[in-house]
Length: 183
Image 1 (cartoon, one colour):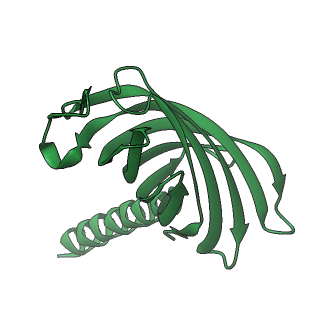
Image 2 (tube, helix red, strand yellow):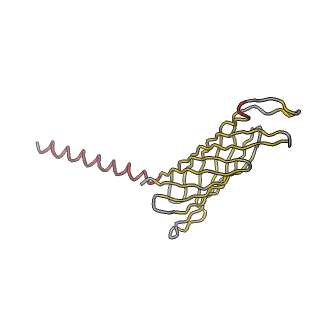
């Protein structure tokens, strides 16, 4: 009976240590949401960061960017880019005692460009392009202002370059949002 009790206590102890390690790993994860602005449009971003160590992190984000293209004064059509970005960020300036960090990073960007609600036609001699897939790169500059240990206000400035975009190969978005750090 005594051996069974000790074995049960040992298994319980191992489970508790494992649970603590799982909980400790949660502090390396954050989620964020921010609305953003771009020329003639707006965007929404949802992102997840996995912190490799205290100074750098992996970044995965889903973005939707709406805008209007006006190739000629007589033609204007809407388009939306639905993007997934995967990248790596590094701290360039940190003031931990003030709760201020600046990160720079970049990576791969891919998604779908939805042009003119899926309609392609010729208007005044200009053919509106068809919707299609996108791929390219992004570079971002982010400022973090910590409000609490688990919450920060962040301001990203992101530039995109999509090699095969039919409307706008490169564009920039500026936003402000909140980031939550899991404990």
